[in-house]
Amino acid sequence: MQLSNIKSARMMRDAGIDAMTALDSGIRDAIDGLPANEQKAIKHAFGKAMASVMVELINPATAAFPELEPDDATWAAVGKARAAERIAS
Image (cartoon, rainbow, N blue to C red; front, side):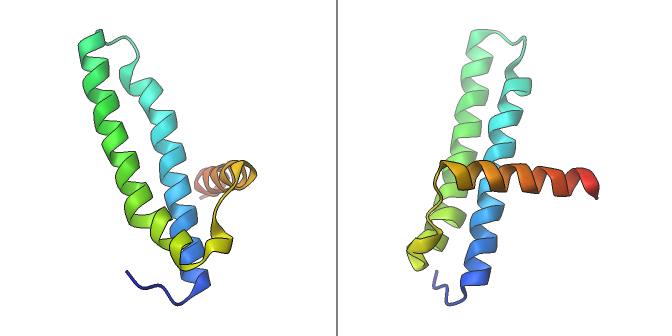
């Protein structure tokens, strides 16, 4: 995928971070109270989804614009901002 617009790349990266944050949060609820074998299968499914988000959204954005490579502070800020946007709407 060729990205020539940093605004679009930033939106892809941020959407990817938002998705990763939501998946990370959701897995805890999804496995709560399940037997170990079911937890393992669900964790595997979540892991596959998270890997896909990285490969399809975040990595292409940061490859096109290395300055968008997120650090821990960016991950936290984007995750919180996107969650707040969803709550407000």
